[in-house]
Every structure is written in C-alpha cells, then in structure tokens.
Image (tube, rainbow, N blue to C red; front, side, top):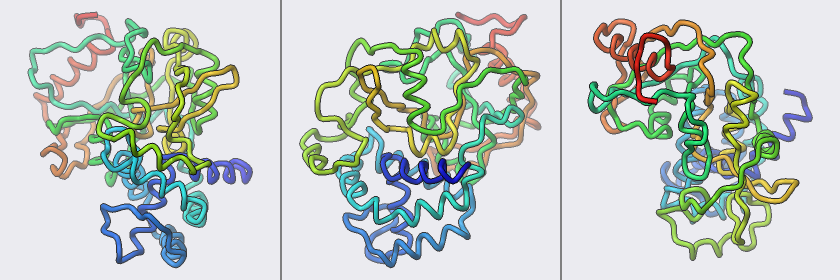
Length: 356
C-alpha cells in the first residue's frame, strides 16, 4: 500500500460506519468509565493515545474480531444500538485518527491484498436435514438477496481467517450454531476477479454494471428493522457521515448477470470491509449505492473456477455463539462424505444431480 493509498485508507476509516466503530471500541479498552460492550458519547485524548500505542502489540486476528463484531453491533441495521451510537462515533472520529494511523502502520500489508487463490475456504454448517439437497449455484444470477446486495446464485469463500475471528464470522454470516466444517477450495490461476478495497471500487462496479432496485428494502439503509426513525435527527449536524440518507434516493446495485458475464468472482478485502460495508456512496451518473451484508473479508464466486476441494481441520469455535462447534472435515469420515456431496451439488459438477 503506497503512502498516498495509506493516507486515503485512514481518511476512509474516519468516514465509514464500519471504520469508526472499531476505533471507538479500541478507545474503550483504555477507559475505566465505559464497559467493554458500551460505546462512548465523548472522546478522551489520553485513552486515544494509549489505544494507538496498544496497536503495536495487537494480533491481526484480534483486530479482525473487533472489526466484525463492532461493525455488526455499532453500525449494522439489525442492532438496536447503532442509530444511537453512530452520531457520537462520527462526531469524535477525527480525534481518533491516531488509532486509525496506528492500525494502518501495522496492518497495511495484510488489510488489502487481492484474493489469495491458494487460501480460499468454504465453510459449511451441518444441514437441518441431511436429506435436503442444495440448489446448484451459478444458474440464475438474477436471484438476488434484498435489492441485489449479492446474488444468491453465487458461492462464498473466505481467505484463511485467523482463529480469533471465527466466532464472530459465523454470526456475521448468519450461521445458526450447528456443527461447522471448512474446506480448501483452490482457485485456478486464470480466474477473473474484481477486487474491492474501498467504497470507490464498489461504486465503480455498480456504475459499470448498474441495476436500479425495484423497491425498498428495510434492512438496507438505516434506520433498520430494530431502530427508530426518530433517532435519525441525531445525524442532522454530522456532516462527515456516510451511514444515513434522510432524503429519498435512487438505489443502484450491481447487475449480477452482467458481472458474471465478465468476471468469475468479486473479492472484498478486509480494508474493503472496514471502509465499504454500510457506506453510502453517491454515484457520478445519479443514484446512490451501498455494500451491505457481506459481513467480512470474503469472495462471492460466480463460476466454478476451483480445483479439487480438500477437507480442513475444524474452525476454532468456542460454542458461545448458539452452541456452534467446529468439526474436523479431514478426520470425520461421515461428515466428509456429506460435505463433499453437498459441495459437488452446489458446484453442479458431473455425476451429482441437484435441483437448479
């Protein structure tokens, strides 16, 4: 990451809802007047400096866990706290710039690489009913979630996430706490991938393949389903925020049919997650867009570009999230057979019949 890109990343953190949230949480770690699960309505300069200094000893996985959990609770549409917290987080974000700079200084080489084709992992919960057959992917890109935040006809992978973030990931990915495995899905070297390292990359994707949403989606923009519209008034004087639009907008999202015609996958880096998830961008040719519900670093694959899948050891799940535990797919023979059948069905590979 160049110095110019580094400076831009720091600025984007201070404008993004998923960026200002972990900065506030890091300040809290150095304060005794706010519980770890709370959020500050002010800013303490001494705590900010201590938090910035503490980053030098922070493991990368700890940063990612903080990023995922705080984005969900302090900036997400389903959290009852987000709409109350975000105005204060934005108001004091500029004072937490030393924390953002410290994060960039230490983690800049890890935060925004392109998709690592040799480290893609498919995570899979045990089905409620093993007799249920999954729908084959890559058959109907027009089948989208919500207004089109992503196509339901894609396949998700993540890039070998550190153990510290595993519990947070299954929450962000809407897993239900059932036994979970993971598989290595090596990607062929000629795969065509659109990389998203910041909101401008998502906006460019949307402008290149635009599709205007047909209707409203209550879970897209703040206020979300568990938030009260009256709390929007707190944003009135927050000029720098990109979390809320109070006026009616034309909502534009990717035309996934068009994206799939030119690309095999869309990869969101961790830098992209921190600066783009929930970030409202105004498009150059009118309209507004936002990436929503990707939840972490991950890749949405639009074609089968994988070599032979390989079962991996268990993800590091503590059971505190819905009782979910990890299963070693490399040693559990029964689960391995079940998973392989499921995965081959999702990929639509020869010899496996699935509903399309």
